[in-house]
Amino acid sequence: MSSDIATMETAFYILCKGVVSAVLIKKIFGYYSALYILLRGNQSLDGYVESIRLKNIDCYSAFTASKTMTAIESHIQIQWAKEFQGEH
Image 1: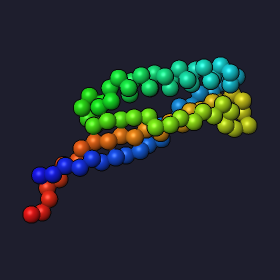
Image 2: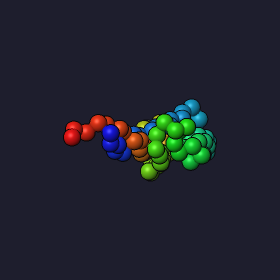
Image 3: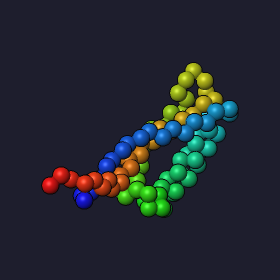
Image 4: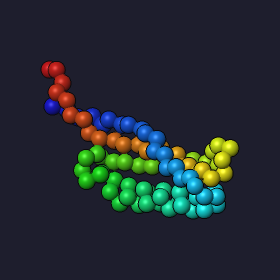
């Protein structure tokens, strides 16, 4: 039996709306900080994966004509060991 590391990248979006963008920016970075602390404190997701890391972040303070919507796009990389039986 052999093993290999599988890697997956995903985009994670946090959207907030309903008040002026100055308030939303503080709110959305609070949510992102909670996600960051969660992933940095448990990089194996309780043993389900080998590692998880935040690769980058993009903030959109007003991404439509509306000034009452704010978003963060974060790219996350997840790695886990994949075991397989090779042919002999």
